[in-house]
Amino acid sequence: MKLAVAGKGGVGKTTLTVLLGEYLTRRGQEVWLVDADSSPCLGPALGLSPAEIPAALVTDSELIRERVGGDGFIRLNPEVDDLPERFRARAAGMHLLVMGSVAGAGAGCACAANALVKSLLGHLLEDRQQWVLVDLEAGVEHLGRGTAESVDGLVVVSEPSLRGLQTAANVSRLARDLGLDRQVLVLNRAAPDNGLPALGGLPPRLPSLEARQLASASALGLAERACIDLACGAILSALANGRGVPDP
Image (cartoon, rainbow, N blue to C red; front, side, top):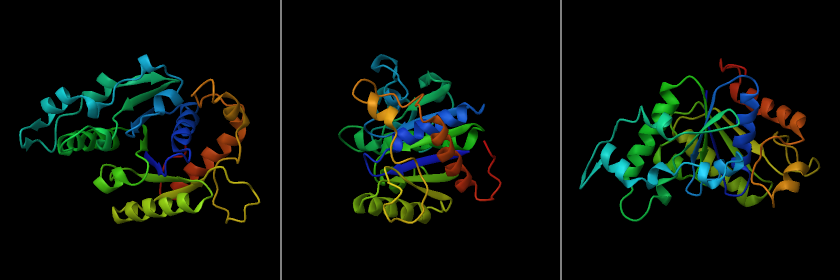
């Protein structure tokens, strides 16, 4: 099962990606987390130090030239089979791969970096039987480039604000244009009495996460595990929607 997590910046999509990964790992699933944001945060959210986090693949110009080419001639389907094992990190029983975003790949044409990102995502999303959770660039960057078109489902994260919900609507619409109809909206930081329809999502507050945020970036091992598990289970069940998705 391959899921992408998208939404406006600052709504909690990286935290949710880690919580879903932790939930699945504790249930015996093999999980790959893919950081596809130009400001990668999955490593810190997994409790890794800067020295333990691999560099973003899109910043490796030598690798891009080797696999994709340059000088006006690029291979649109570069060889990437060996890259996940070469560049992964391990944390809390999960695999982490930091790809970065072509939006943060540096000056000049991003075509070569995009070709590498798209091929690597395609390899992970189509050729592997494990759970793959992709933390996308804030907004619609990856969806606009089609780099997440092979996922099985999309988790759109928002907060109870007009801007957050407008971004969520744009993400959802663009994903549907790509044929990705299996979607779920997760409303974060929403009080039970906010007057919004019952959209489901995380508890309105996670006090143990709030208490540690100035001292640690990790989102693992929170005290609210029981309610987090209920939310994660509900999200995955909503995505399954009776279409034969395995129940973790």
